[in-house]
Length: 83
Image 1 (cartoon, rainbow, N blue to C red):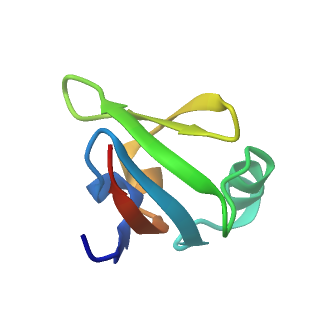
Image 2: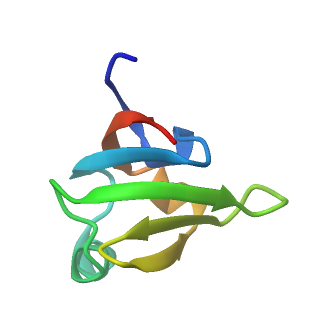
């Protein structure tokens, strides 16, 4: 399967990706995401989407994190494949 760069909220459950950047997130919100480990080069796995589509659950650095869909839409990733 070829690698594809896309936004985190476009992944499907089970997809694994590497974060390539944060876009449209500035100031304290950006700093908070970086403190939680959402930075370039970190591997992340899309776990699931809530029944109504928002929020999403991701797993990175040994912990689970819930993100709003609009926040996940500002995180670009390089998809590695599905599991």
